[in-house]
Image (cartoon, rainbow, N blue to C red; front, side):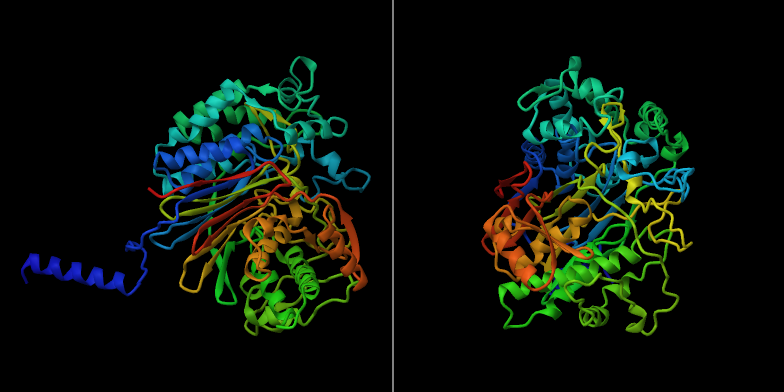
Length: 578
């Protein structure tokens, strides 16, 4: 056959596939995105940096990296180069979803009893946090590089420009940063540790709101990474600074240069679960994204067409209690422990689990999916989880002008992490995300400390799609073990409670992990919810201000509806399609 005729026939076949909506990997869809771009993140400086990248033709991934580099400077209490993160990336043309796991890992010398004292007691959270033992091998720089190689559109060095310039020229200290420096002064080592002391207490004077703060050391570090890539962070001079800081007294850690050299991020599966006529797509363990599918699914089985708003809130509480119990029991590092994830999000198990609704004053216990999923065997048996998580972290949601999207949640764990300083940034205390206490009864835990293991995380970057695969929502939040509740509130708020993006974020936070139900009561709405739940028999703990930092984008027929959490300092910025 004539080669030109073959070319014409193949071209016609390609066009036919597109018109039928066949979405095969490697075949580019001809659909056109015309809703513009949007960035919602935790600080105006970071949002501005992301928008600049988008204006230069960059992707959502490019913008996310640039924004996070700035957040590491202006919001060091929440995340930075010394920590890790999870990135969920959506490619509009191919419909591909990618989950990059940049979670920190335990040093090779880590031991299950490393937080246990000689007298048999466990180090308290506040004892463990500032110790070198608390520092895990940072993963965020590796995540940057992998993400940029896969989805980046502008040169690598371009992503660092705003953060470098801001470090050199100075930024205005925000109220939140100043507040947290004040908060940890009496309970931490920020004013004592070398590097941190000089930065946060220049000339011995604590920084305050409105000060102009420069970080030349951070600028130097960023310049090195922009020129040499991640190898200088994991193999070079920066790596040596990290190890030096980790192994300082008091309570030095055992991280080595080999731990940094051997670090790799992981491309993990994305899981999707049906919710009505939609799909909730999210991140797999060590993330807690699966809880989003579980909570929403159980919630739907607990309500009906006659449910009042009060009944729906109670259903949300009970769906959380059931899901948290399962999450706490089964989730850990999937490379180290067996997790029956597919069974836990299976519609048959979710339906059965909803029937196990606890009495309001009962202590929730995990379910057993093997009773419902017949081919599930060898389900692991674990002891009662004792993990504690602090409410640090940051989240951003971005949709670019091409229709691509990123949900990035990043962390150094607690406020200012371990408060240990290296090369212009703070190191994480992520090892405290493991279960620190070794059970006295000899039972094993899914989230126990082990060499090279990744601690379980509550971070849950999530996207929601319609039945035809169209993007409907990009969401996520910081907040420690309350993250699954914060994020799910936005899903139910938008798709069941008929709220706008901002209304969903503003809605009082309700966290139901364990026996007590925390209700945010800084508004009258929160007080009413607390009263209603109390009257139903729930044990209520009133919280005046929760630590969420939800950053949300909803795709509507009219365009993009974005929201930033007023509990923090974030903003939303929109960029029109050209």
